[in-house]
Length: 271
Image (cartoon, rainbow, N blue to C red):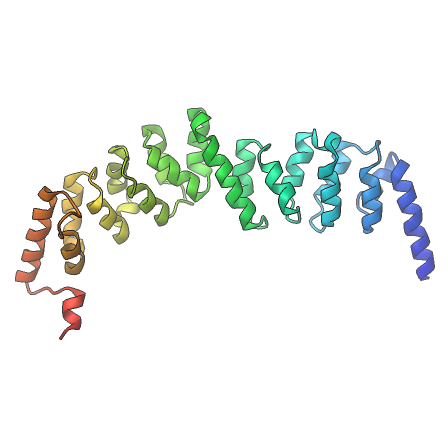
C-alpha cells in the first residue's frame, strides 16, 4: 500500500511540472511539499491559482521561500501581498517584502495576531518612515485605524485635523500619550487636546505628565492639582521640575492639603 502511495506522489510531482487546467487547480492543494515546489516552476500556473496555494495557512516554508525567490512571480502585487501576510513566511523574506507593500496593507499586517512580532514592529517602522510624505487624507485614515505607535506619532504631530482623530483611536495606549507629552518640542495644541480629552484626561499618569509639560494650559493643570497625592505634589514642586510660576501653585496646594491634615503616602508610612 505504501509503495502505491509513493508511486502516486511521484506521478503527481511529474504532473505538477507540466499540468494545466483542472489538474493545476487540484494540485495547488496537494499535501506533498515536492509536488508544490514543482508546481511553482510550472509556467502555466496562474496568479489566482498561486494565491490560492499561498493562502493555505500550513503551507511549508520551503514553498514560500521558492515563490519569493522567483522574481517573475513576485512582480504581481497580489502574490507579493499574499506572501507577506503568510504566518509561516521566512523572516528575511518578510523583511524584504515589507518595503514593497502599500501603506494600508502595512497597517493591516501590524494588526494581524498570526504575524510574528518582529515583522509587525518592522512594518510600523516602515509606516513611521513614510509619514512625512503621505497626504493629509491618508494620515487621517491612519490616525483612525493605525496601530498605537503610529497613532502616537500623529498625536505628537499636532495637526488639528489629525489630533482629535488620533486621540480617539481605540489602539492608542497611555504609553504613547506619555511619550508624546515627554517631547521637548511639541505643538501647544497637543497637551491642550489631551487635557480636554474625555479618556486621557482621567488618567493619573497623564495628569502628572501634563503638569510637567510646559506647554500644557495652566487652567487644566491647576484643575488637576487637587487630584494628585501630596507626595507627588512635593516631588513636582522641587526646583527645576516645572516653571517657577506653577511651582508656587504646587507649594500652595501642598500647604493647603497639610493644613487639612492630609499626609503623603511616604509620611503615613513613617508612623
